[in-house]
Image (cartoon, rainbow over all chains, first blue to last red; front, side, top):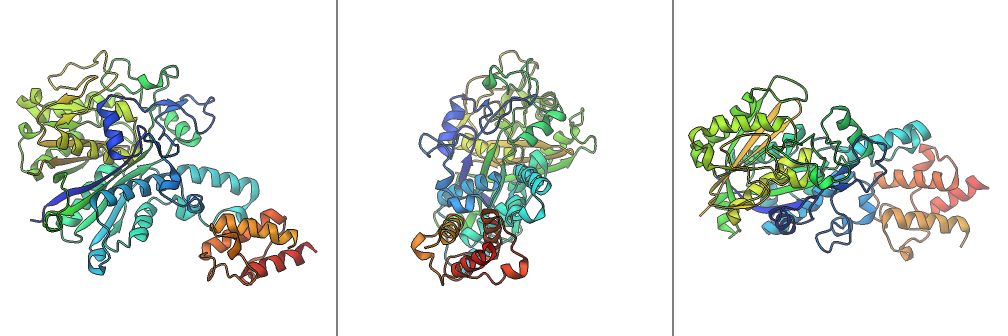
Amino acid sequence: MRRVVVTGLGLVTPLASGVEESWRRILDGQSGAGKISRFDASHLATDYACEVPHGDGTDGTFNPDDWMAPKDQRKVDTFILYGIAAAAQAVEDAGWTPDDRAELDRTGVLIGSGIGGLNSIAETALVLRDRGPRRVSPFFVPGALINLISGQVSIRYGFRGPNHSVVTACSTGAHAIGDAARLIRDDDADVMIAGGAEASISEIGIAGFNACKALSTKRSDEPTKASRPYDVDSDGFVMGEGSGIVVLEEYEHAKARGAKIYAEVIGYGLSGDAYHITAPSEDGDGAERCMRMALKKAGLQPSDIDYINAHGTSTMADKIELGAVERMMGDAADKVTMSSTKSMTGHLLGAAGAIEAIFSILAIRDQVAPPTINLDNPAVETKVDLAPNAKRERKINVALSNSFGFGGTNASVIFRKVD
Amino acid sequence: MSDVADRVKKIVVEHLGVEESKVVDNASFIDDLGADSLDTVELVMAFEEEFGIEIPDDAAETIQTFGDAVGFISNANA
């Protein structure tokens, strides 16, 4: 069977633009949360979020001009800009910019988003209402469509292989990586650029998730304390934004060109809750079956798992996921470390699974589990090590990353160290 | 150069990200200034906006160069 490895990483997160700077701040336990700066949010139930720090590109800030010409930035929603930036980082990291037509035909792109150009749609709706249909930009549709990151990346690099996308709410990033790995395994491509992007920190985005009662509302005074998975004082998730993109590659292909190999994708599981449009099934059955499927595909025992990057959103769903993990791990529950990096990044929705897959891969590379910050008073009693407030240096050969989304859609991806 | 030409040039430079010196009378938006068909639609919208005129679709199709644009707008404004 064709094996699939990770050979490139790219990150735009609320902590920083760039893989190493984001990861350094994650291990340091920093929060990316703050008052919303991009628009006046004072009238909303939540006026804080985890925004990508925009700036001149120094000190980990995100400078749009570094990734896309200013005249082209106007033509795309911000989620596409983040996706292109993370993809460019990943492609450069992998050193994969072939000229050969056959290689380009065997390189595909599968990047998704949970919501896509939500803010562009909202703003264009106002243009339509106030100024009429002739004022609607010709770039509105291609600038808001979810699969247009895949399209843009393929155009930029000439990648002519499978061009695909995923939309599964907060499982998008994990599904994108899992599905892309399958395309390589099934010999439809040798290299896939995969991941997710999101930019829904906008008036309509916050208002919409507030209406679902999904967001934290009580920490306006201390936004950095708002995302607190497993803590008694958690009161909803904090919205994040950004993008995570990986370069996946067939193992022999990567070896033959001497590529740096971060980890191998060894397991992928998917399931549906068939329960509720926004709430996870209370018995955690969907999450458990999803993890078990990934484990079975990987040919591993629960005790082989060293680290789990939890979906852990800082909501009532955290306990449900933890219960599923405890049942799956059984006697090995006290051997695994599970943390929620959303305590630092907030919830990046369709990009969450992708950035968390990257954190899982880096945990394997550096043999260290990132912390769950703000876990001051645990709301749960568990044998599972939740790495409260401090990174955990430990053996990590195998890492599992969980993502669960609205609609009851679940995805788990397992990575393993490659010697 | 007329006021109209200056204002049109400013829009073209901004939207297409080209050097001002390239925006000459016979410069074709698509062949010389790197525009695609969507860019030309947006340019026409920007002209309408700037000059408070309406450029019907069949007229828009005749505006291929910078000179065409300046000519059309000057007549429309006359």
